[in-house]
Image (cartoon, rainbow, N blue to C red; front, side, top):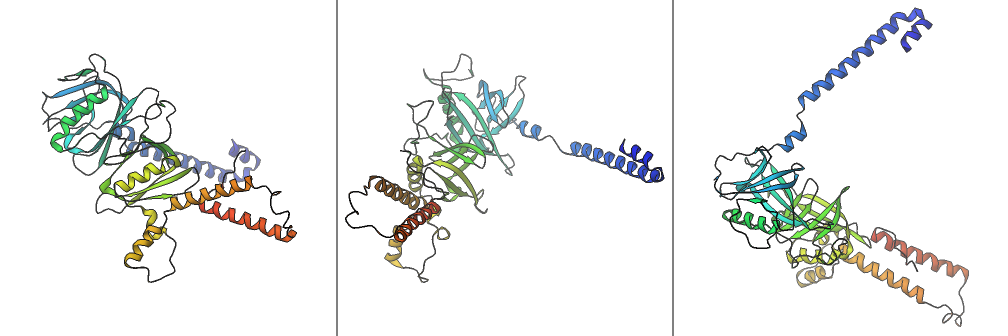
Length: 398
């Protein structure tokens, strides 16, 4: 319409406006064609993730246990039947209502398998997570499903040969999976109080110990579990599991008075370069338990690494027993910040308890300039501590 209006207004430029209209139409047609071509060439990502059937030709069909209506979250969010083939050549399959296999994992492809309590739920639930490799060994895979921690309903487990009275869905599945994985010397791993228990009280189930550590990876919130064989992160995609043999180092960063970050440098393969994973906003209440876990399993603390230490003035360094003592005397970043935070709180408490009328009046008062200098030095000292901690020191409400 605009071109028609301009042509009527300036008829001498009618041919120019016609060329412009033709060019615009050509661009619109080309853009539409490229969009359709791109859609045809790109496969559906959702379809690729959701449909991963595996070959079951070698499976022994006489050793199958099937669990009805299991809630899967990875690789797809859907209720399916869990079919477990306990033969050494078998594995697990997620089966739809028509009996077709949606996806599955062979036992010989299982790398790690864990069973973890689902945090922040009023009713106890457990997530089973399998970390595996594809049959060709070229890629990794993940499978996650959830079961209630309750006695299964009648008919929920089909093909189960033995069970003890009072067993729950969780305990039954662990028994079945451990039996199937025995030829491969693998077992389902669970949290253990002896390894780690959080000091943060659960709001939903206060009487039970919490094994998770709430944290963020980027903008995603999730939970860390410190297990007997490695460190787990979930439950949003992608899950992460750092077995001890893949961890290069662990360090603490962004230390504040209430929170800190945990950095794990791990290798996807022995000959691969380490990649660092940062988990932020961890509650300081769990630091002691985390640090004890890392030391117990002899995981390297990168807070003590040379690149994270202040540069030393003696270029030749220390040797022998002196060097060992120097390592002992060195503070990690978190220990140093915690100590300085405690010193700052002690100073603030002394200031509140100080009564200027009880001392100092008989000694006379200094000049205005001296008081200003003292006040400036106090502010500067506080700012230095704030910078060391990475945040402003919080003052008491009272």
